[in-house]
Length: 275
Image (tube, rainbow, N blue to C red; front, side):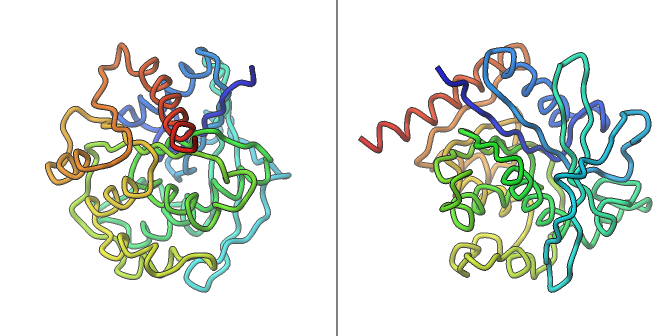
């Protein structure tokens, strides 16, 4: 039987970034799912605070070189890769000098939310999907972890729905308690629009707060996971209204196995609906 393929898209992964609930999950999950017997690929942003020499990042020339237009400006896409030897897995990094040179994650040295976080998220999401196309690697499931990946479910179901790489792909989205008080740029939805998108498809992204980004991602996803034990009350309430499979919070000692089973459930749900 052909191995199921899972694409992990996370805004944080340890050891490249400090340990958080999200970065630890994104580190352990791909390895565990791979050991269970699924095939994986893993992506994250190449934030400027990541030590390239220590972690032995190097550019993948055959995947780099594409330009993406965001807000009427060209931004070169650079792809780097590093290995986690103990896990026998590779991590691909989405890089760009305009967006990911700052020695920080989401706030500057004064604690101010970065004004270009909107474009960084757009570039990251589109960069991952375009790179996977170049790889020619068709995922059965895409698992998105964190708000920076919140555009992925919408893109896969709209702009990329007819692409043979993604036409049968199911998207799972995890909600974490890693919110921010600020809102992204008010033009976020307009900037995120691709040629194949309509305004209605991006309507949920018009007020780009932490809560609305997560709601929008859940709206487009085929399955939703509660990644943190405690999440925003509004998101908790919204999650209970969804018509797609929802997985409750899983403790660290069992989440890998349960997540892998959940991917299978989401795929099976689609097969049942298609009959």
